[in-house]
Image (tube, rainbow, N blue to C red):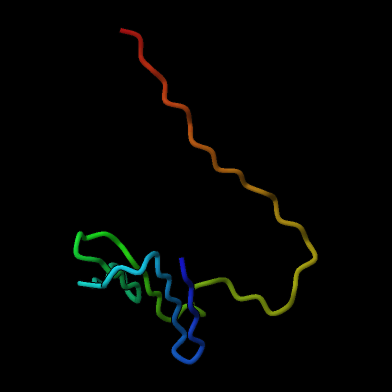
Length: 79
């Protein structure tokens, strides 16, 4: 995966592989997804990226709680 940030245009681009881009679709305001010939996602562009995240004016010394996300095991139902 390759990630590029263009500060002049305020855009972030993530490229997942080197397949040729055949089609692009805006899936949300300012979020464009690139597809290859088999309709697989090969890239994602996010516009106005600096306005999308939280603003931090100075470093924080407080520690944030760690959140672990785990999949729940699949439960088999008795017949």
